[in-house]
Length: 82
Image (cartoon, rainbow, N blue to C red; front, side, top):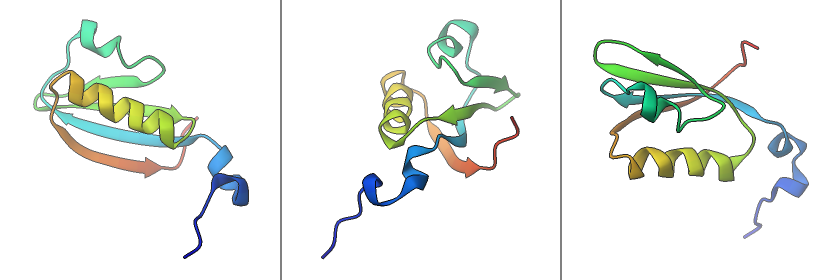
């Protein structure tokens, strides 16, 4: 079995745009914890979106969501609008 590494794939080096949805309304103080991501709050959920540099940073955001007790609903890799 061959292990894939980012050294073999230049795409891994490029930041990727993500949209991450959590259940509920996130207040301003919690939104500040997601530095570098835009936060859009609707009546039933909150959308975090922005560029995330690599897989480690994505896992960091997901760990932060868990540590804040938020319920993760969706993670999507999208085309950047920036």
